[in-house]
Image: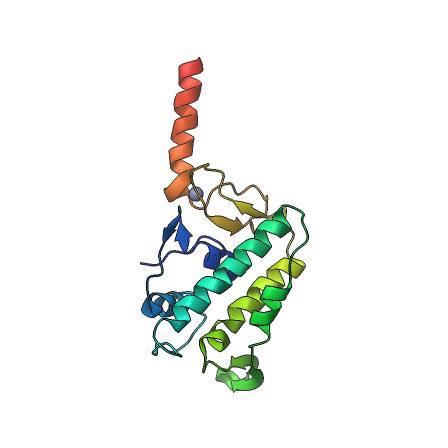
Length: 182
Ligand SMILES: [Zn+2]
């Protein structure tokens, strides 16, 4: 079961390394993740030669991780690597007939190569870097946890990747600490 805690595709991409542990071991893992993330519609085979998608996805993840870390630290972001990924995007818009005679406008991306398949993710990352308030782009407060999220809560006080993974454990620890002190 693939869980998403990032509340943004680019952060979910970074979160595919969990506590230093790789969750992508082959093209099929990347395809399954892309499908679960809603980045691909049909469950098809991976484009490219075997292992190509895995390598491209890991490379994009590293590019995004580096850029997000730099942006978060208030440092200059090296835009060249992400721009190279963005250059692979090939898309057109399509009008889609909805029920009740409504129409929606949707972007359709070419997905013939691993880089094309990953281009929408690269665009999401670029969007985050250019427009997000990075005070709200944070790492989980658990010091052993490596997961990132975009805090979309109204109060902007989100602290944990999830209550189940880190929140409850830390609250119990803080409670014990207080009991110990009193
Ligand atoms: Zn966490």
